[in-house]
Length: 75
Image (cartoon, rainbow, N blue to C red; front, side, top):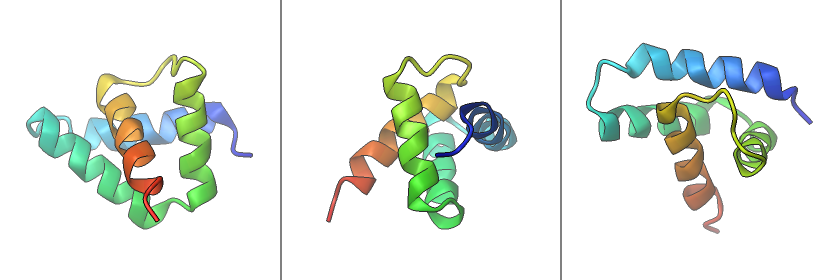
């Protein structure tokens, strides 16, 4: 299991780097980046963190985690 504080810091940094884009585009870019660079186990841990309340995630990061839930649930 990944350290939640590290996951939060990392995904919030990614979100900060694309925050200048419109919300939906930024969420899509974050989600694409996470799917391309994070192993499934880290993505699952991030979604579990959100399920536990998702404290300290920026709105962009939280929305991207929700997109991971939708996409990673597909076969």
